[in-house]
Image 1 (tube, rainbow, N blue to C red):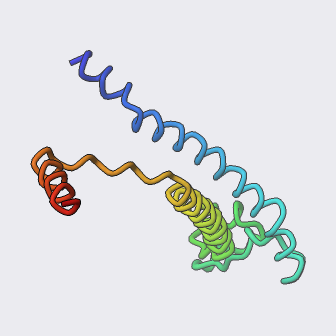
Image 2: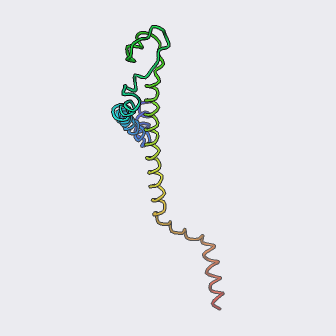
Image 3: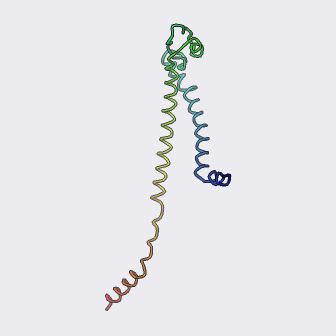
Length: 140
């Protein structure tokens, strides 16, 4: 069983997947920081200067706090600002992945066009012999 596991792990696809997951997680953190630290403060300033993550409304009459973390302690809240931030994270990440896939597909197409055509396989022996007989007859 250990040998089978070693063979499975040593396959190229598994290693490529592992590298992709690690890079994807790191890239996700970069996009989250971009949205949380750059984009959402600008959007928050446009919509009244508040932290966009703190946009919510209480679903309970006990909720009176202006901060989301404190309001969650007081009762149920509908935190639409956090949801919008998560959706924006997803859209940015999906768009960047789309651009990366589009670039890789373009590169693959370009490599296919640049690839030299494979030389034609020699004809079978009987076809070659018949061609030779035809050429000899044509000369006579």
